[in-house]
Length: 389
Ligand SMILES: NC(=O)c1ccc[n+]([C@@H]2O[C@H](COP(=O)([O-])OP(=O)(O)OC[C@H]3O[C@@H](n4cnc5c(N)ncnc54)[C@H](O)[C@@H]3O)[C@@H](O)[C@H]2O)c1
Ligand SMILES: O=C(CO)[C@@H](O)[C@H](O)[C@H](O)[C@H](O)COP(=O)(O)O
Ligand SMILES: [Co+2]
Image (cartoon, rainbow, N blue to C red):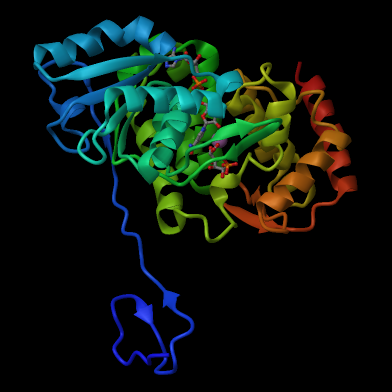
């Protein structure tokens, strides 16, 4: 058995007869998230430059978005004489499955996608982002893609992180990868056609960020949230600070722990019980609505623990209602919460690691929430919800 004295790159032996190797390397990842107004203006080159100019583009567009913007997208490419193919994909929670991923992979094969120089463009909401992202992370073991989010959740959350995924059986996001897009282009103009319910849905993920790390963002939501939803971020009420603070807050939390080696994650707030609740209610509840139910319950738990006062609890619930979001639902009950607790503990490697708000704008993590505490909090949340009607 030879003894290796020299250490080749990343391969370590210890000067003994070689029978075991340790391979260590780092995977450098850089990606850009940029506000890109007037994205579909043919004078704006961003759509074709993102991820590197040149080459053809496979453009995967969610079917509603194609109906609303597909003509402008086609005209953008044709005005510039750039070769492209547009693939229209139905993308909503009930088709967030591997079958949708395979549909994208089939289009990638038919297009004859080059491995590195032809990033796929994903244009749609969070479901489309997650499906196309997963297809790109699997295709030839990693294919670049560019995200163009068209919903509020997409703009501030699904479009800016590293996660891709689909549901499997009754389990939310059970299959997925960490595969950030090479670039995300944010154009709030897409919100002009987003319905009110989906705007409120996105506000829930912005409220998540505000409650655990950004009190000023909460103040902006409290002051302007209803008007921003009514105006779809296109009116006189200034929405730029809300969107910018939301994206900045998300990226500030994601960047240092992008692969989630640490499972105490403030961006998990609102996502301890919501995955189970969302999937059991499907298709009744949107993702953000389930997240809001989770936050309304955990706000009550935090209040019962003295982490925030009665005025703060009631102010948070009041804002949720003003944004058109639910504060309580029949699935917020002991059996469902118990099942959610069990699955979340598995997801967090054996501990609860529940983010709980401290006042408004900060959070801590706890591992000792009991079934009795959950049951009492669920009852109190229902009572508060009934009293507010
Ligand atoms: N990967 C992540 O980090 C991450 C983060 C947050 C949420 N998510 C996922 O995102 C999903 C929720 O995303 P979503 O709220 O965007 O839902 P969605 O993707 O289902 O889109 C919502 C609906 O809006 C329509 N739509 C999209 N853009 C439109 C526009 N500009 N105008 C009019 N209608 C438009 C679509 O047809 C769709 O029916 C969930 O599956 C959630 O798990 C992922
Ligand atoms: O919903 C998502 C991601 O899917 C985000 O809004 C959320 O903040 C976080 O990423 C949570 O960690 C939930 O993500 P997941 O691992 O359960 O998919
Ligand atoms: Co979420």
